[in-house]
Image (cartoon, rainbow, N blue to C red):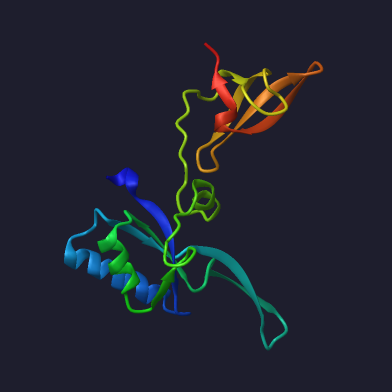
Length: 178
């Protein structure tokens, strides 16, 4: 049933995002429906605010800011009960979608919002020879120099025109040579 859960965008009164999140979580816990409503997120980003101080200097401070003010994102299995619980939570105005039909986010939208990170398992390590399987350097062979799990990137050294050239690629663009 976990595969049936999708991410939906819920519109809230401005400034009620945290209350809505807390209220839905309490209702889910009280009713024991965590299999239906699995996760509630408020997409945030870190930004640096610069404020001028009285002495003429500037103060920089990293703060968390809502990416989508007035919206909460809910991972849920859509049925009458889950729809009713979310829709009737205090502070919720509606689901995002045409009319009264909520529309789930696409995988691309989920990725762009940074809600879920796709983790790709790699079967190569530093020093291994790999083949580039997509992109402008397709079919080139290179040696893995660095693997960045967080960014899902790999840096390989490719021989081009008699010179070793480092190239950064996504994990899915390379495969281990047998």
